[in-house]
Each structure stands twice: as structure tokens, then as C-alpha cells.
Length: 231
Image 1 (cartoon, rainbow, N blue to C red):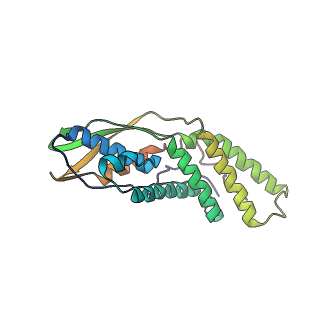
Image 2: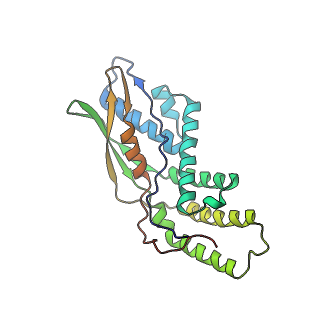
Image 3: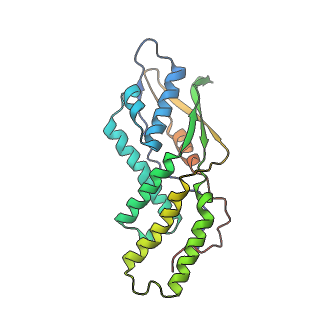
């Protein structure tokens, strides 16, 4: 099985809510800014404090959506490293924990809103996480060493479930270690559209997809010919 270079993006399960303007003095220029920042904090940080306080959001829904984001990234990592055949409840939980550590390092900034051709926008500056490149060499070395142990018969008497778990946990451990000193690629600016009908407003789903796709950088190491499956 070959490990091919690919873009890692989570399946789109991002929080989009409609909000009404309340209070005479509320200004769109800052209301949109805080709204988008609060949404990103919920989805990537699990921080719903301002979402609940400023946007009157629901804590239970926010936590559920954060868990969805973690689960989506966990599944993407499992697929990226060809671990689907090793997938179990325990492996899923392990990679969900890894996903939380990765997203905890997420960096983004949201500008004040501005009007252009009748529509409102905010600029979201994303600093893409370089976790895939950062861990690439170590993961390749780990897989090669694991495969050598397999060839040498180290795992001949090990049950398949334990064998699969050990292999997957090794990759998860490497990813986790690199979240302690995160690296980032050059910033990417997303021009995010705010849909506003005069009474309610929300960020566009297309804009959130762009933000999500930019959060974790594409792996740039030349991994096309590297065998990253355990034998």
C-alpha cells in the first residue's frame, strides 16, 4: 500500500447559526467580527464562552459540534495514514485526542467587517498548521522500523487487535509530540461573506469551508513512493 501526498481537510461539520441584532448601539463592523471569531473558537478550540455570552448560543450544541469537528479530523488522519483497517473504538478515541491537541494550536485572526458591492465581509487570517510536514520524517522512519520488526517476526505471537493498536498508537504518539511545538505555514487570508437579510445574519457555508480547508496545511513532503502501510 502506498502513501500518496494528499490534502488533509476535515469533513464539513461546522457551526453556522443565525443571529438577530439586539440593542440600539450594536455595530455591524464589530458584531460580525466577534460572531465569526466566536464560531471559530467553538469549532476549533472547544471554547464556547463568548459564543454563549455574546451570541446567546447553546452550550450543549456547541460542545456537540466541537466533538463533531474532532471526530472528522480524527477520521481524516486515520485515512491519511492508511489506518482504516486498524480502526477500532480505541483507535478512534486516540486520534480524537490527537485532533484536539492539533486544533488547540490553531491560529486565526478576524478583521472588522467591511462592505463591498452591497455585501459585508470579514477577512479571516489563517496560519495553517504544518503538522503533516512537521511529523513526516519521523512517521516514515517509524513505519519502516515497524515493518522491519514484522519481517523479523517480532509480532508473530501478537494478536491482530494488539498489533493494529500498537501500530496506530505509534503514529498518534508522533503527531501528539509535534503539537507541543507547533509550526505554521505562511498565513492565508479568507474573504468571508456574511449573509445579512436585515434582521438575521450568518457566515456563508462556502466561506467556512474555505476556512476549514486552510486550517491544516497540505503535506508537501514528497511521499508518493513511500510505503506507509504496516505489513
